[in-house]
Length: 84
Figure 1 (cartoon, rainbow, N blue to C red):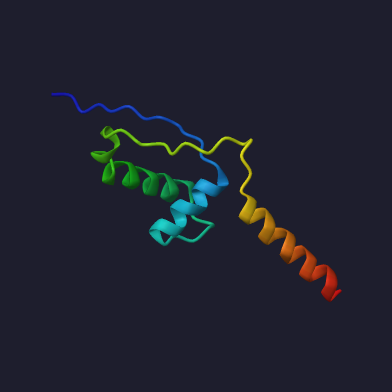
Figure 2: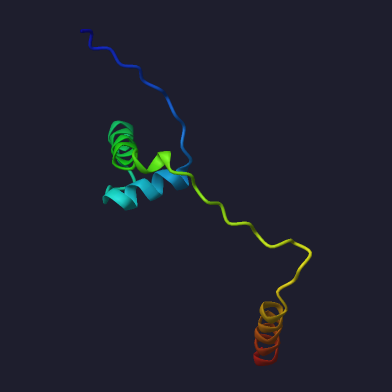
């Protein structure tokens, strides 16, 4: 029986690295080896769940405006403008 394994090099964004650090309570200036270990741990902890399909929520069409949100933004703007 041979003990062989393969490794992969991945690149993650700074924001993803921040989230990993927050998730595992690591400082933001953690070494790359420790960050890689945290990513490995995350993969192996959630590996069984990865085989289930991920449901992606559909965003509403961009042509439809959220009128209540726009009205609230306009009121806030008017309030700031009058206060100045």
